[in-house]
Length: 173
Ligand SMILES: Nc1ncnc2c1ncn2[C@@H]1O[C@H](COP(=O)(O)OP(=O)(O)OP(=O)(O)O)[C@@H](O)[C@H]1O
Ligand SMILES: Nc1nc2c(c(=O)[nH]1)N[C@H]1C(S)=C(S)[C@@H](COP(=O)(O)O)O[C@H]1N2
Image 1 (cartoon, protein in one colour):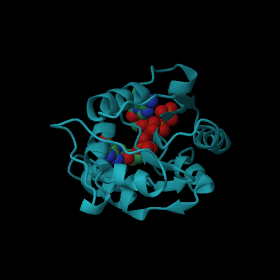
Image 2 (cartoon, helix red, strand yellow; image 1 turned 135 degrees about the horizontal axis):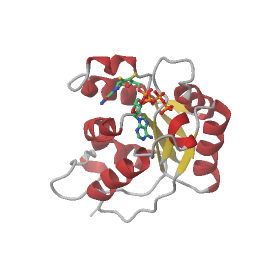
Image 3 (cartoon, rainbow, N blue to C red; image 1 turned 30 degrees about the vertical axis):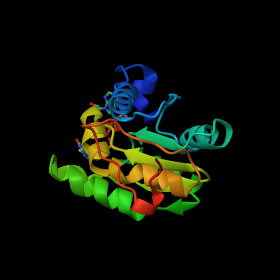
Image 4 (spheres, helix red, strand yellow; image 1 turned 90 degrees about the vertical axis):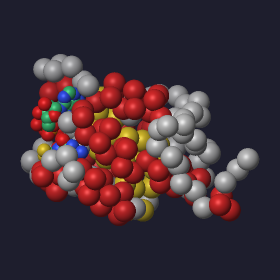
């Protein structure tokens, strides 16, 4: 979980991004998981370093960033994400923007991406803490099967949360 925010990094406001990510994942995942967190300013090189470390050294299978996806000059999270990507999964950005339009007309301002690096799926979420639930609710059904396909662990969700979709042939007992 990576918060990208100049002001949260400087302590001007308390970071609500990582707590919102943690509580969404705690409420949703039934598979045991371990949280690793990073708080970085809107600096491309520092974002790239955090992403590479979480994937390459820590072995994360899912990296969620929040913040820095908009059109302002210091918003560089998508550039950093693209720079470390092996492949782009366009559907994630498209779907997150589509579901976000139900909440705010400014959803189209987010340049958020979903990419694969090695065994990890990296998803960019907008910085507004409420956007974390709004966007994850809309795409998470496809996340576990994506992680299966890139060689990560078999993730499952709790009943009455986001139902995971896998083709029948990919289901495990
Ligand atoms: N990590 C965070 N914790 C709490 N609130 C946040 C966080 N990130 C963003 N916000 C809130 O969402 C708004 C829009 O987020 P955005 O990422 O555009 O921030 P920003 O205006 O670029 O500034 P900064 O990078 O300093 O957070 C912010 O003005 C702030 O109110
Ligand atoms: N679901 C959701 N998507 C959203 C928002 C939101 O509140 N909810 N905010 C939008 C706004 S106002 C902006 S500017 C862009 C980029 O936000 P970021 O720079 O904080 O990443 O995300 C957009 N996407």
